[in-house]
Length: 374
Ligand code: AOF
Ligand code: ZN
Picture (cartoon, rainbow, N blue to C red):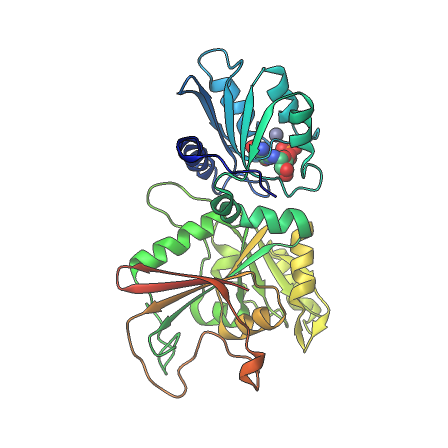
């Protein structure tokens, strides 16, 4: 629900300040999970007098940082904030109360807080205290920015992104299994940015056996945060010398397995520091819905699935995937036996296809990226 219907000039100005708040919010990417990305700008007499954003999980909220950075009295000023100010006593006292106490005259809000603890209560506190409230400015962009937070706070399940990279003829490797590289350097850099954003990265045991990936984040400009590595491994056959068990990272490695695993194998990976989650069997494999619930309970708000084809099919067909990123490199491999991004059993009829919506197409050099939601 939005009461946003500002007229011409006012509307444009509100959007400009909210764009600044959005820009600030983005600075928190990678560090606020499972909390939202939030930015705030305080404006008085047509000048920005304070700015802030939510910098780190557990730290002060954006609004408070904006107050602390203000270089003059904020009484009577307007605050632009990307997310409805909170109304609850969490790690910090409620921001809406602070806004009232500081004498802010008007609050322009991007989106309502989907957190059931807040969800409109912050606005109510402001309005009850005679502060003018406008909502819904840049709402669509802000909902996209916080798509992980929205899913996680309302379902306690991680927002799941399936990433694939294939050739123009739909292959993820040649017939001999050679796959480095399908997508170009720009595309791969972008994927590392996403690794920095998400809490977990998931691959199947087949990918570990074939590629021995490190699953860490490698960025040039910033250090980057490693996601928790999650290996889906029905029989717990993860080699003890694999990089995911040996390569140093602040993030732990979780092995998701089933009753099919030999006790000795489970013990061995645990001794190497791996954390084991045993799920019920689903079609003879790890139950991904159960696994996602278990990950959500650990505070993991987002998971990037990076294959291979068997895990990708299980993920798509079990309904855990929220978003797909499909990179296409302009190369042709051919080969009946060359693998494709999604294998498994497959469906019989076109009408049963998994459909994507809200498609967005972009390019990275000569590569194409197709994004869509399930
Ligand atoms: C943030 N940063 O800038 C705003 C948030 O864990 P707590 O106690 O810090 O509270 C987190 C909740 O506060 C979060 O789920 C959201 O509903 C609200 N607003 N949170 O982490 C912020 N404005
Ligand atoms: Zn707050």
